[in-house]
Image (cartoon, rainbow over all chains, first blue to last red; front, side, top):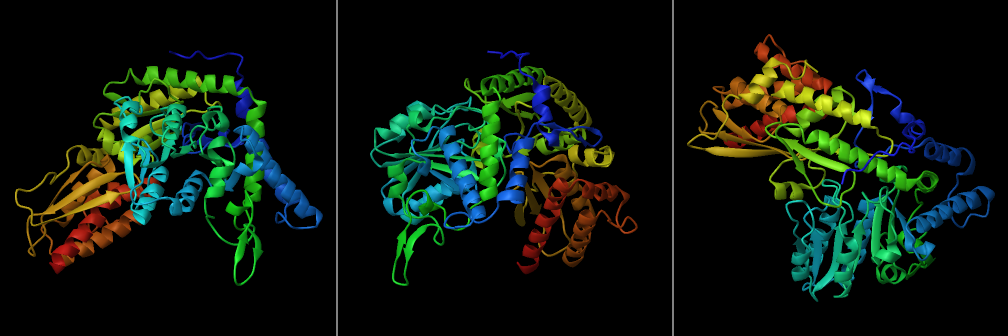
Length: 411
Length: 140
């Protein structure tokens, strides 16, 4: 199962595209293993945002002057690019949001009139808080029940349990494509098929998947797919809700105001068509421009080789970590992304993380916004190293040395 | 780095004073750091007489050491004095200026936390929780 490094993949050239990597922290070269929290940005993304503000900025839609036309074209071109990136059938099925969290909140809010007290919403044990709390609130509003699909010891969805949980009362199944804590790649297509058999809506939280897996929403046949720009080498504050045309049209608007209307009188308002019905107010135009640039960047590198490199780093790091006494890997699914969560017996993740930072190794420690998952494993948090194609084998070696140092210091 | 994980922090973190649950618990309070999931349970076995606190924690070394030093510092104080000490120390942790002419030299390790902003809440958690518990005692 160990992936091999491919010498044809030129990491140094890739790294030169990411200016932030070229710096020292506490006197040592930065090693950024916190990519599951947010990825760094290539020069092309940074330049595209800067150029947009220098040359093209105005408000979008309805303007007759040249700058407004250019800003509108740039914004809508981003929508087209995103639609192609995930193989949506129509550009207007792409709703631009602040991020994954807002995308999920949009659906959870706007679906409210369709949910009744006898309905059930299904999520999994490994969900991020952003795919738990909006559904809890929906259940509070409607009286519906939130049910949780269990996972096995490896951190994989228990499909047998799912087949028992799913029934004609199930109105929506929402699950993460790739777990941000465990790295598990979920069998979303199978889950979606099961949900379709009872006519339930399906939503996939793709925040952690979009940068590492080819997304084809038509092949998945999901009703909704959500992801963020900043985990995809794009800017913060921009994200995507994909929805099938008929599903989006079945929802009430999320926010009300400018852009999302066709006609307003003091007596009544006619809402705009897709996608504008769900984009009230001036959108994050520069964010959309930056996200398109990030998608272009990913299109210009060999993504298969890049993902192979990430998994080679994962496998190499995992083998090194397993040599450390008293280590426990949290999340050992067969099908994984390049994320490793681990704990070391009797040592607290925060202490380890602070000492790693002294050697310029950036990892994330804590519950990773998955407190129910931490409860499932009966732990308070983990140390999480998450890899990108710009990371190197040498950086993994430094992390392992720093871990040895931390363990010696704290023991 | 040695400034943070120095001997005093490690000693108190690994072998904390007043760690455990007293046989008789008059009042208890839980503290929770939502950023990292750390928890501390503080117990008082006495009512309105001088303070005597014990704690249990699944927190980091910084949190445990801070809790250990806290119990040593405020136990045997009156409720009013305990609150004053807690206010002084919490300000001292945030600003790195705990007055070592007033408090034990061991407290100097907590003056380093200010250099690690992401860890300040770890050190403050026991003191915040103690303040809540003492306020409960005061008005019980």
